[in-house]
Length: 317
Image (tube, rainbow, N blue to C red; front, top):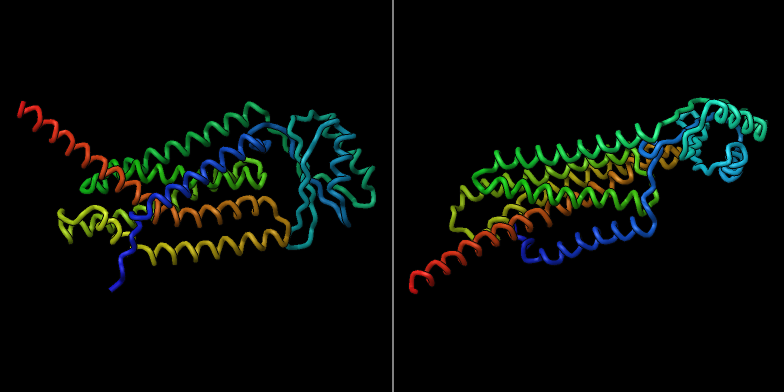
């Protein structure tokens, strides 16, 4: 017989870990600032193919001389060995400026056969609208999750289960945000994609645990203490959650390593935060969500008992 793990008894430790991570994310945001990609802040992205070797510092200096603006440089190489350099300028360049930039780079790096592959310009207003719509999508997803859990698990207090689940998901999303901030990855469409993926992935684990709680409540009856019920349910789901998370992490980790080898930064900035999010999502589903729900249920019971006690005192008077 499997020994029941006392997750609820260790909840103070789990809550401390979660709060520390939130604190680190907020401190890093204030100290280092949050880098916004041009997709949100507006700007110009120029992609050039080239041969031979290029120095990122020399390219950056050449861009500064050509348009008088700072830029970020990313070198990429695909599986066929073709090399690209992606130049991101955090301001909108006009047609003359982009033409001047291309001419200056081709003259500066004449031996590298630079050719324009793609030139994209994002207006700051459009970038702001895209960010607002992305955040709205996250908010809408959270509301729908609460409604779904409230209906499906109404026999065990579905609304509170849904709210605690979403609070846990918010913590997961803050961890992903912290990864972007700490590792200086600009917030872009990859950030929104990772957040939505983690939202769906983590709630899946949480729903499985809620399902075990509901089933064990039916089998064991209402007299079983809430702590024992939740500890038993999480323990029963533990192996499945860990196996699923490890399998997912191995797949994402493989993608991350291959992307690093071939210097495909657009995939690295998706796969790496996703890898951290999956690992932390497993922890939060097993250790945070159930503990939050138990704390809420115990608070409700204490509130009812307090009201009853006050009722008795008032009747005696």
